[in-house]
Image 1 (tube, rainbow, N blue to C red):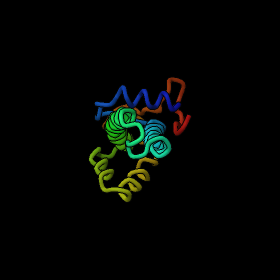
Image 2 (cartoon, rainbow, N blue to C red):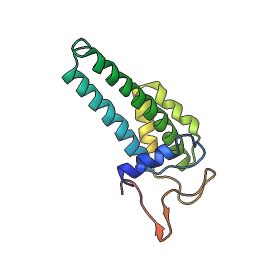
Image 3 (tube, rainbow, N blue to C red):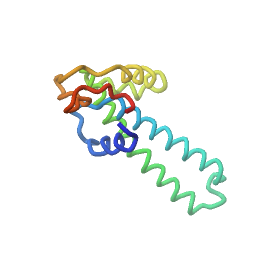
Length: 139
């Protein structure tokens, strides 16, 4: 799954917490969130002087970052729950995300595992293709 397809899929399923997501979707959404935060931080440090230099632009940029971050947090929670479902685990494990760094590391390790082969109680295998099975991690 390409980065664009993964993010589009995640946004299409933003409020769908009862299905499954492949590893590629989870990792591309996580990478997009991380990249967006890093990019916003770099721009903030390079251009703005705590809002004193360009207060109007700083306010607009801050609002845009808040909207981006809030949206991607919701998308990340949704795709994490669906990723856990792909491994036939309860979505409640996504609460590990809120434990800070250690919780995120544990959750990343859990979500790195391969999903269950074939259908499980949360739906069909998201990596199944009409012409056979596909090991879908980043492709």
